[in-house]
Amino acid sequence: MATADESPGVDLDQQPARRVARTATHRLPAIGEMEGGGIRGSDDGTGLAIAVACSRFNGRVTDMLLAGALAELDRRGVAETDRTVVWVPGAFELPLAAMTLAGTRQFDAVICLGAVIRGETSHYDFVAGECAAGIQRVQLDMRLPVVFGVLTTENLDQALGRAGGALGNKGTEAAATAIEMANLLRRLASTAAGVPGNAGTAIAGPAGDAG
Image 1 (cartoon, rainbow, N blue to C red):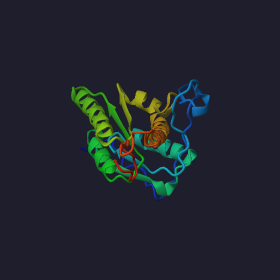
Image 2 (image 1 turned 120 degrees about the vertical axis):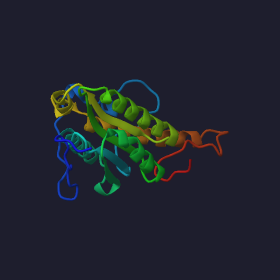
Image 3 (image 1 turned 90 degrees about the horizontal axis):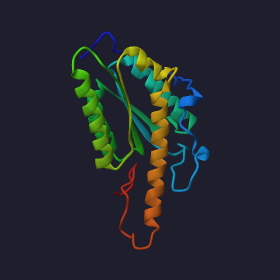
């Protein structure tokens, strides 16, 4: 449903990814800065194929989320040719788009970007809740990182503050999470395959790996 706040979005063929400044306070820590042992995913996106599903509703906000995500993918080494961006009407449609993208087995992770802003009715609660539940379901069913980069705010100012404003950019954070989780699943699959007695048992992997 079109609204005055809706935007047709950015033309990815014509516009380079805009770089969005983020405050250090809200920056995700680099892998090397974290303490403790265990298996972690690298923050290097080289060789990864990433899909982004972005909502057109509240386009003023989602354009900024997308810009932040694309800039972060670029910064972390994900090639332009390894990125696919698809547009959906609103946040409610994100889970279906994510499921379809994941089902192609061509991607190592899917990023879902949207903005749900509370209005005068209960519509917000239904859309925000079902969107989050749907994205989680896709991630678990497909065993693929599907990152929730959807803002759920009380008003437009709060959304703008989290889409490149004083509180960082949720799109940037979502891209970083997608890369780390994609690399983590690769490491877990590799580790499981190398454990004696695990022959024939595999963690379903992304981008064409056998599940």
